[in-house]
Every structure is written in structure tokens, then in C-alpha cells.
Length: 279
Image (cartoon, rainbow, N blue to C red; front, side, top):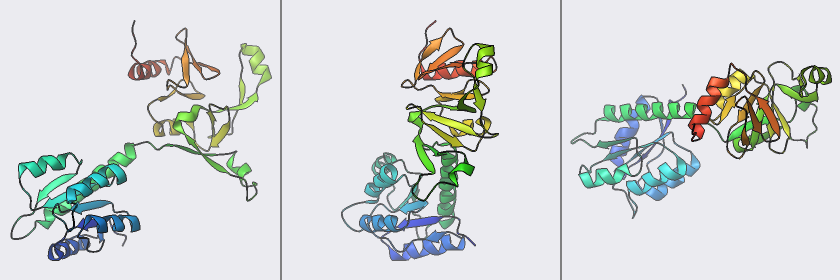
């Protein structure tokens, strides 16, 4: 059975490490080896990243568990729980600066392993929720339709990372102009992409492709992206948004994009969230 998570125990007392390790393994967690110091902990992390770390504060060497907590919080983003003998206010308030998940005091004569396991489960639950709600750095897009990229040779790049800040719009329109519709409507109109495909355009007007609909992708984008009509999602960041035109259109880069009535209320809310408006 696959372990629930991998735990790093940073503890200088071998007997307590053994007790905690056995309790965690019985609950189907994998546990790293005996780790009595900050330097050894960093070696362990380089070899295998833990899902959660348990930190004693008084460790071997010059550095403490609080020193390690700062590294885990700000350099590695690994959730951690202090499990310590220290019960004084000074240590507790110092530990708060490291953004720990929990601060458990070792009970004598035995550590309450059930309390530790519940703290780990809570930390893992928070981590999962945070990862689910957080956004990545960008989109990994295809250079063309997937069927087309299969014909690329061994030196051609088929998928390209596009940072969110470089994306101007995401659309179901192709780059091929529909001359007949353009004449009928008096504005540029374009042929549609294949069903359930979107085109991602960056500020250099390069196009990339994703096999996903606008409805599916909107929930995976940062809050500065908003759908404005049936065909387009646009980036409202200040370096992309040139401005509004009569309330019903947006100038996004070199594009004039129409805001449909269906999406206008949400567009207004998003603009109010991003920018200070005065009537």
C-alpha cells in the first residue's frame, strides 16, 4: 500500500525518534532516517522532499529547530510542526515568526503520539487545500493542435511554457479571418478552432494551443483573467489592459474586445477588485 505521506523527524534524541517513527509507520506514513541536526535535515531534504516535517527546537549543532523552521517556510515551502520540550512564552512567540503549522509540547513521561498524528493530518489537509486553490506560474501549451505536433521531428519543441504575465488573451477563435462575416458585421471576425480547443496568444502575438474549453480553463487562471464573451478570456493586468472604450469594449494589447451583456456584471466586479474606480 502506498504511504499516506513522507515525514521527516528532526530530533536529537534517538529513543524519541524511534517512538515517533514506529507510531507513524503503523499509520502508513513513510519516515526518513534519524536526523539530529539542521545540517543533516537539509541533506535529507535534498535527497527526498518530505510532505511534513516534525521539528524539535533543541538540536545537535549550533542551529536550532527554529532556524530550520525559517528555512523550511521561506526556502522550501514545506509545512512543519514543532514538537519540543520548550513551553515558555518567549520560545513560542519566536516560533510564530516561522509560520509553523502547530506547536506541540512534549508531555512527560511519554509523548502523545495521537496528538502528533492528528497535527500531521491537519497539516496535510491544509496543504492539499492550498495546492488546490493556488495557481501555477503559467500554462504548458502546445505549439499546434495535438494531432499536428505528433508529426514534429525530434528537434522540434511540441509544448512550451507560457507565463501568465505574458498572456494577452485566450480564445476559441483561430488567426484565420472570416472575410464574409467580417463584411457582414463590419468588424474583424475569425474562423473557429476545433471543438474544445483554445488558442493562447502572448504579447508578441505568438499563438499556442490547449485541448480544453474556455469554461474549463477559466477556473485554473489567476483572478486577473476574466471571460468577457463567448469566445474570449482576457488578461486585465495593467501591463496588458490599455483601457476601456465606452464601457462595452476593452483594448487589450492591440485588440479591441467586446464585452457581452452576459459577462459584463462579472467584468465590472473584477475591474473594481483590481483597480480603484471613481464615479
